[in-house]
Length: 258
Image (cartoon, rainbow, N blue to C red):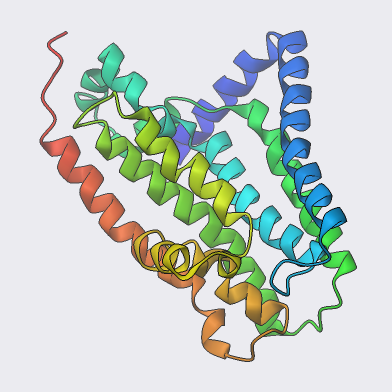
């Protein structure tokens, strides 16, 4: 943790050395994020609901998945940029250092510009909660917290799998983006609005449904099944094979010879 904090301070200092560039990039990220937001608003301007889900219910779902993705893009960007470590040969240097490999990879890159998306997702979350008539209980509050944490966990796991894929090839960027950016765009809507094949895939293979669909049903009062409160915890179990696959890939890694 000390290593991560020191690295974070270094990245903040380096980023603020070019204030004008940081501000322009920060503002551009705001525009990119709100383009997603306005797409949803435009959709609901045409349709009153999507399979029973209203605008603010979808925005709640949207904000949670965007929060998890933005958090990972901001604070664990190094894993998402793992292919650069392999291509440049920097991963070889990490292997000979007396620190945990994964921590070093996480510290490799931090994109503080993406913090704008993180803040915006929290703003949309608050807007959605204010406009939803939710009868709050301790279990529902706990469910919401677990949804936010599991959103971070699922993208962390996907980034780990994408990094492990780089041990096989660094030319598969499109395949990795299919499950990161592509998965994010699908999961920002309640998974139940899609057909059964999508629901099954994003429940069993990549458990987005346990992040912001089944627990969402409980928070919104669409289901009284208290088991849904614990479904976000399944995502943390999903992290176990992600860690195992990444570690196996690291052990089989052969130096680029630099």
